[in-house]
Length: 266
Image (cartoon, rainbow, N blue to C red):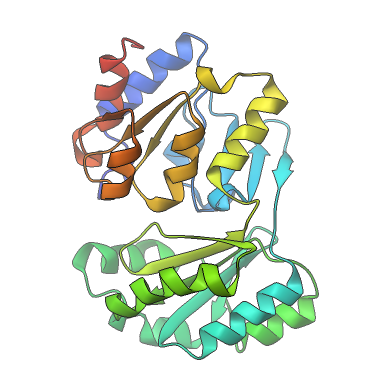
């Protein structure tokens, strides 16, 4: 939905508004928690339901409630922390709809976000939306509850690929995905965008054949596999493109609008 400058192309805004006028529900699906989604996304026409934290929750913004939730149990989260501490990574976690990281994160972060676009996102968004603590594992232990999501950022891209293969073996009960070139995201196995979309469809009485999903990252894969029509952005991961019903233009070229036009929805 967003271009590389984290803005919604005007053509996407117009196309989604036209779809909403036809009674189509617009459901943003993100790795972010609801309150950290960009305001233009939260205010889209008919956007009442939001899939957040990679499917860790489905929020009804109008009613102010959560209709689906899946979190990582505390004991498992602590085991993941122990694994992450042995790696050359920065890490954070989400709990109670808040992002937490260690105070040392900001001082080291530029070394892990060397790509110019990624570095711009680091300073404009990531560093501004974290609550800091001295020791994240100790904080989560004292909090004594489950966490919504855990995340690692790598400067060694080869190590990231190794961990993408290793983590599912070490933690088969967790969902391992990625949405950025330098990250790995960890959720409950029940916290995927596909399972969240399935839960929302059941809640609303909508058949999966009546859904269309757009995606670009691996954390979109099972959502696209669930949806009646799946659309990959031109800038998507190759695996996403292979699994899609249709490949549209990139996020910088209003690919959502062009796909809605292609399928004669608007």
